[in-house]
Each structure stands twice: as structure tokens, then as C-alpha cells.
Length: 63
Image (cartoon, rainbow, N blue to C red; front, side, top):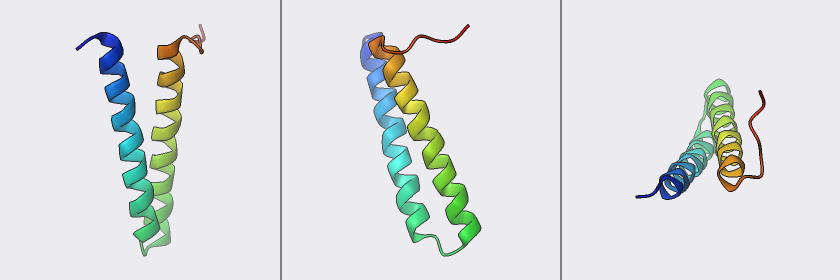
């Protein structure tokens, strides 16, 4: 698999995991557990968006 294909696969995996975490958060009965899962999902979504932008050349890493 090419580097671009690997990057896309990793990004999609992060997005899928974020969706799973969000769904788990919605089912969580404990408010602290819900918050922890939602924050983790948010971080994964943010990271996947950043990597997606870098892979497409839209975002340049800061120095």
C-alpha cells in the first residue's frame, strides 16, 4: 500500500474509533465516564482532521 493509502486508512480508522467512542459515551450511565469518552472522541476527530489536512497539503505543520 502506498503512503497516501496508509494515511487514508489510518485517518479512517481514527474516525471510526471516534464514532465508536461517541456511541459508547451516549450509552454510558456514569457522567464522568461519558465525559471521558466524549473528550477522547473529540481528540481523535481533531487529530484525524489535522492529519487529513496535512495529507492533502491544506495544512502546513508549524515550526
